[in-house]
Amino acid sequence: MNIQDSQLSAFRAEAREWLERNFPKSLAGRGDAYFDISPRYPEGEDWAAWRKAMGDKGWGTPTWPAEYGGGGLTRQEAAILRDEMEKIGAFTPMIGIAQSMFGPTLLEYGTEAQKQRHIPPVCRGEIVWCQGYSEPGAGSDLASLKTKAEDKGDHYLVNGQKIWTSGSMHAQWCFCLVRTSNDHKHEGISFLLIDMATPGVEVRPITLISGKQTFAEVFFTDVKVPKENLVGGLREGWTIAKRLMQFEREGIGARKMTVGELRPLDVVAKEYVGTDEQGRLDDPDLRARIVRHQMWERAHRLTVERVAEEAKTGPSEATSVLKNAGSIALQTRGELLMEIMGHRGIGWEGEDYTQTERDSARQMLQNKAHSIYGGTYEIQANIISKRILGMRDHQ
Ligand SMILES: Cc1cc2nc3c(=O)[nH]c(=O)nc-3n(C[C@H](O)[C@H](O)[C@H](O)COP(=O)(O)OP(=O)(O)OC[C@H]3O[C@@H](n4cnc5c(N)ncnc54)[C@H](O)[C@@H]3O)c2cc1C
Image (cartoon, rainbow, N blue to C red; front, side, top):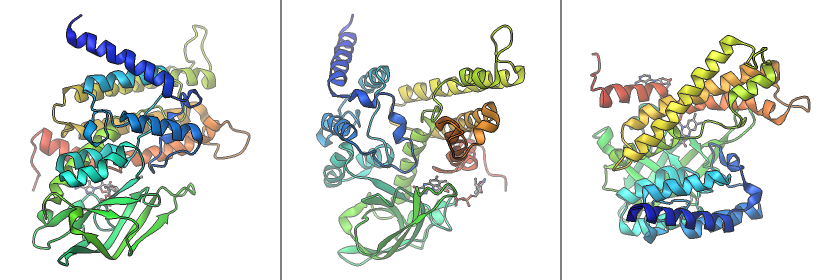
């Protein structure tokens, strides 16, 4: 065994022993409680203890520098940690916009003072951040955003409106794209950090058809933002915004595909549809489609791992491919599950249906959003054609 291998196996032993001591067994396999677009931490003693243990150790943000509260691990060590967690049904409690998008971007573009102030609470899972990008007239064409920040000497004065701001009802901070110049479209945008408790910030939740509230409209009326909250230079916000979206798409593309019903689809299908005399699923057409989907899912998962291993400087344009492939996998799975369950898959409420059956229709509908947030399917296709395939716009 060479030195590197022996160091890695020593790390594996350390990780296993630490997890054994610190991961509350009552939470084994319950990582799905986190799977929600709106980042909220479940309540309860064990959840709090697990979050604190991972936060103190820095392993919720394993590869971030230890000096800011991260784990300081190499990518290989982080992969070992993930592997050891999976073995015992453990999961990272640090899931959210702060860890997946904001933190990595601030580590690249923030000043030393901004990193010292904002990164440690993210590593400890103490602060919820929201993303103030979209506006009523600026979604796919994000750079046409109008929320403006005027220079008032010692502060910026922000006025405008954001929409679809996930988790903003619970967020303490918002990273926000604002217009600081009307002379240029993209180059007139700046990246500002706004404390949601500042006077003039108003959050109006949007109620979904399911009755849930996962996002909101956010209004800014004469909101005073200290100048030190500008990230990067003035009017350099678009470059930072694009980098953040790569982190966002990397997270979305890599997301676990099995939410709700955790068993493999072929196993569930046999239960609902039945088997033939050879023990195979008793519907050849459905069988073929399930196998095709499982191959897609597996290929997607392996590609996500390969891209992550090959990436030397973090995510690239390849994240657009992964996001779209992930959308197809997730949406196909939801639709197949509904079909497998038949009429039982459309049970919305009531004791006649199992929890899994009741979840399936909601999950299938929620999966539709996967190809919208983080930039739509069509916009990813545009990015792939222009920046990866080098194709030009047809005039
Ligand atoms: C669940 C959910 C959570 C969200 N969370 C956040 C959040 O936290 N923060 C935030 O800022 N935003 C958030 N969004 C907003 C999301 O980023 C936007 O909805 C998305 O970028 C699309 O913008 P739009 O809704 O304005 O649609 P539009 O831009 O109006 O697009 C409408 C349709 O036209 C298509 N289209 C538009 N332009 C083109 C083009 N050039 N070529 C081909 N097709 C095109 C689109 O693909 C889409 O199908 C969230 C959205 C959802 C659904």
